[in-house]
Image (cartoon, rainbow, N blue to C red; front, side):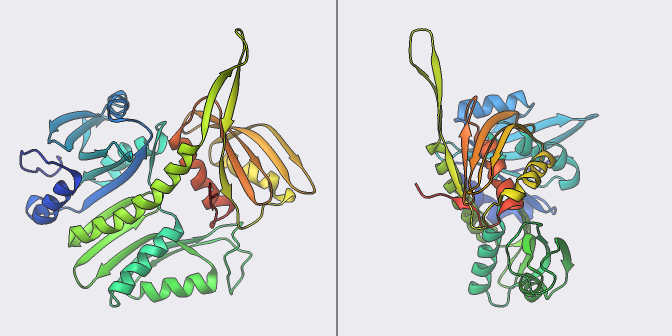
Amino acid sequence: MEVFEVESREFASRPSFNQYLADHYGELTDRDLYILTGLTEYDRETFDEVLAENHYHVIDDLGAVQKMERRYGDGKRIQFYLSFDEESGIFLCYTDMRKTEEIENTLEKFLRETRGVHYLFVSPRVLQTIREEIVEGEPAAQITEFVAKRTDRTDTASTYRPEFARTINYYGDDGLDTLREMERNYGVLPRIMEFDIPSGLQFRVNREGMFKFLSGNLLDLFEYIQLCISEALKVKEAYEEADFQMVPVSDQLDVPTSEPVAITLHNSLQYHEVDDLKQSLGNHKYVVIDSYAEEGSLYFSTKLIDETKNSVFSIKANEDEIRVFPQDRKDLGSFYRFYEFIQDSIDERAELAQA
């Protein structure tokens, strides 16, 4: 199995490649197109080295786009087209290979586990924004499938049994009204949505920044992808304000200094919840070291080892804010994963503090 074949030419930019796909995709393949979105702290040269270290290789250079391949397992492989924007650190992977086979065993793992790299986490708030923008412009738009979730610690209003966490999987042409009813009555927030827009676009989006193009005007889909990119760049900008360096205080001694990134909580953290927080961190593959908590006006601090990204950082928290301090070195992927953890497990409305 190979990825769809584009004509052998040099594309000047990502928009020119996107336009080419919009004009010709139906002629290139009859399979669905997956677009995986990611971001990295690396420049192009370093990112290419990271790709090579993870056994991804260029098989055709098309200017602003490269056709890539990675072999895995017993003679299996994935192929995809890579577009990398060095200024923003945003990259897109385009493929029509299978999500539950080639994508799951390669690109998803690369985005999830590689240091300095992460997928574009699409928060429930951004998913809701996409939904409302679509419906405002296309009142007849339908949601035909969704997955929505209510977490244990959420403060999202719920008419019925707010004390229960829940996950709802729904299929039906009335998904838009049903999702709004579920949000209102059961306090759930979207994780996956599939849209059918009568003017000519059918697509699916999930919280890991994966877009599945089913049919219609591909350029319209790229507009929604750009909305997610804009939100991701806000996180990256805040991360870049953080700093870690060794400052010499004498000829023999260097002292580490660290400037944190602050995450504002709208659902205040309480002392009696600290043990649950530590357990949740462990469940998400963080090792908690040297933790300390003080009652009253909450103070909580700990060092964390991110086992997925293989990085170390510290956090200090009070009721309304969590500050993240880089330790051995900065890692955008690890910070982005932790920010996702906070929104998923601690406070769905958490946001980066204003500088």
